[in-house]
Image 1 (spheres, protein in one colour):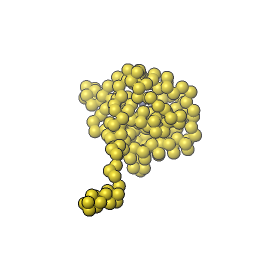
Image 2 (cartoon, helix red, strand yellow):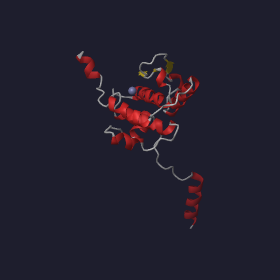
Image 3 (tube, protein in one colour):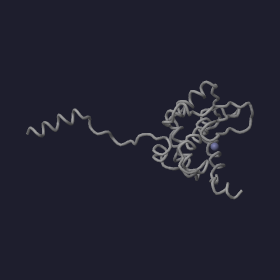
Image 4 (cartoon, protein in one colour):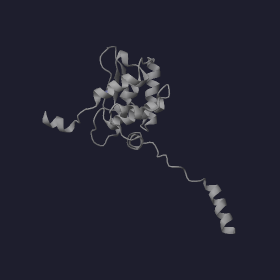
Length: 176
Ligand SMILES: [Zn+2]
């Protein structure tokens, strides 16, 4: 339907995003159901989203697809019970929870959020993922977009000097 097409953004970099993932995360280790649920809860908290709205996690017995349903549910296929697949789907849910207007499912915003989650929760301390994704021709939104718009992390501006020290200093200056 034409009306559907205008409201749903195309998903132009999906297959390339999948190829990049497969190149970066070979041989994913499977996590136990309890580990997957605990990880999802930590990710949701990291994104500043209320625990009550944490997506339902369904561990499917099928070998089909792993999938996120809006911001409310993640279904993992048998092969998809790994850290990086969970983070991939959690990034979809976070984007769905925070997007102002529909964005491309595997577009720059999603990829930036996903990479931020991998940097934070990736088991082996993934580094250089942004550079790697870009070298594959993928479009990645800035880390700041991921943090401020979707993860709602406070900005990394340096904190002002602590108040007591500042006050003491200004007294000294005033006394001179
Ligand atoms: Zn996806």
